[in-house]
Length: 384
Image (cartoon, rainbow, N blue to C red; front, side):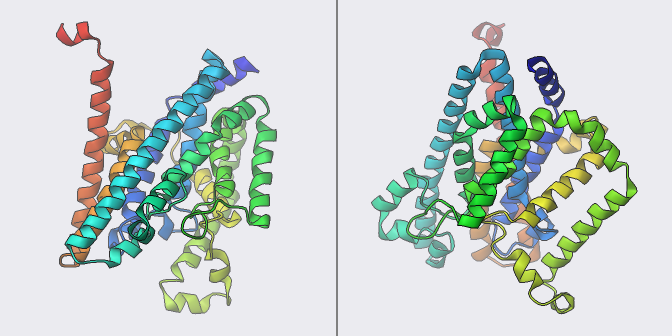
């Protein structure tokens, strides 16, 4: 088992598509977090049921499982588990710093610009009324300021990654089945984590864990099914079916914005499919994402030549340094929103702040990458 798994991990390691997709997810999350931004019409969520969050969680599970499964096989399970908890602590520390600075920044800007509506818009009213209490709940990941929900979710999922990695290494199919069972139970029994001052998490970790585990399952044993998947992708009827489902999803999502299209849809169909599908990641949303994955891996194979093109390097770099880029994107989305509500609300301005934010995120990625390279250089090498 170990030699087979090692070979599969080796084949999956170094796949540039992982960083590419993480980079795309980061860029899309930034654009989606800017309210009333025309440029966000280009992101995934406007073309079907799934969106950038689904991509971020699935690819995150793929990448994380790949890293720590390899570490388990090379250095032992105990080492891998301690490294996972170290990473959880790093993510948690980043979240706390981000939470405090973010909330203080919004409060300061709201007072200086006489725009109190952004306090409720970014869901920090509780912090203004009860700062100490909200801070304490924030330490327990129970406060939910806008745009920090994805990082909250990743921290919760990573905390259980030692169990998931162990299960995927030794009983992968049973682990996936347990994940599906937990997902189904959470939807049927309405399980979720509570939030302060009321309600539950925007992204239910009991449900979203399924995408995370599916990503890890694919990372470790997906290569075993690669020949069968390629054979299925070669069948025109299956590709046509996949495209039809994507077209169906696009029609449903577009009906919210196009009244004429909404009138053509069966009564209540759009409401049934789109209502609360994000919190508990509805089955049709997962199916939509898997359909996209099926077609993407067919169109963009691992050895796709353009993955090493200069044009894609900024996106790939943003995927490699996803945490720093994500944190920067949270602040940049707020700054972009502030610029839009305090100046002329024109299409040119929306495009300008969107491009400027993406450029800044890319600059952060390159700086963090460069900084890591300097830290890895020896003192002798630095002076030679």
